[in-house]
Image 1 (cartoon, rainbow, N blue to C red):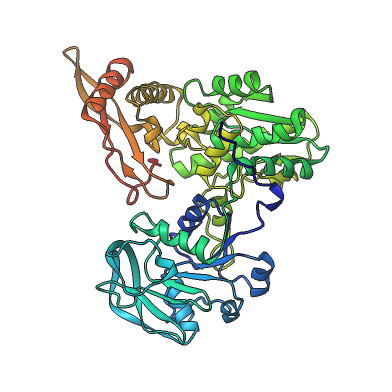
Image 2: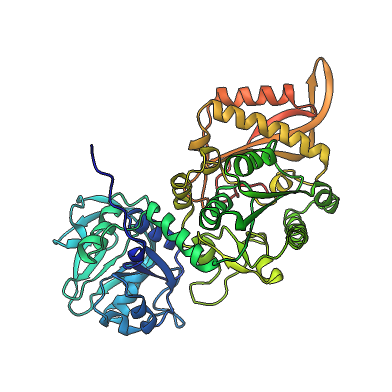
Length: 525
């Protein structure tokens, strides 16, 4: 029988890493994801991080990200020139390549035309970076400047029709630059390029594994909490569920989870959470029925952002009251993910703009003076799902499509009432049933119903009707940052429409949303 793979000691889980310095690129998280997928740990830090701080982290390699600015601008964001003297392998991508050229006395000039989109890459000289890369492969360009004079000691290794210098390197100093973006799916050989940098040049080994991380997280929680007691807000989504399971494995009955029924949940949501965590996993679970309280506060509130704030503030109130009733807790466990950490600080090192007004438990730590337990703060969403599988969570949780914190309140456009919520619940239940029956649920990022704030004329049973409209929303995505509308089969759409109109009283028309993100959003709020 084949031997099980040897597990990496948690003591060395972070012994090696790739450090990504962020200059504001929209693709920076993609770089980190690609490195993680190669089973190597990496972190994203601000481009303003000092050389002494970088040295202290002892990275095996450094990636300089792309960015929206130009190195030729008066207030261009630069890094410390000493970075290039550390002897650590460096890969500059797009802005990162122009930055190193500019700082090492090469020449960068503005292009006549911005190059954005696909290009054909031609490798002109051997490079360890291009090991195994097919010639004439497709790459993704997004830049307005170009390099027309190389720094001393550098050579050009590849070009495109519009970029005479598309890749540069100084192999002696192990400094490499790419004008294109290897981290995006549009670059066909991008994974090979990054692997060459990670393994051939940086000499990393594969030791970032979810099974090792589970052990590491559990041991970290034990050390942090000691003999203390932990409170966890449980929604039933994958993030809070994984956190609850990790903390429970670490400290057992000293964990108490609170599930708040806010009245804007989907059909059977509360019952599923109770069955999974209280009955199956025997976790201390406190269920609070606060539906009336939430719905009373939502009366007359039609603006989606105001709905978010009402729900977030009310959740804090309910959670605080219940926590005080249950006893003394020293810690609060939250499902903070690595993208949340990244978004909390701008690439320049200062505070970023508010991206979400309802995040995790909406400010509870500050209000309740609890110490935070955040075991997922190093992970991306796909890593959390794999971790959920590793620690034994069922597919119905691990593979659950994202569900917004404000729940159905933002899918009922306009005023939220019990009657309108019931219409939406029934329609949403039918849509999900049909999507699952068609074996498409796991292939879609999200699929759901939206109740529109309009009524239309119809004919049902030879009689005129004037009833509500349900919109079907289904999208494909890898990370939720962008999304394409899903090309659902016409037969499936027809079955959904027929069932909704026949089964849901008060609906006489069903429409399908074919808007991508951007320009639209996934939700209709």
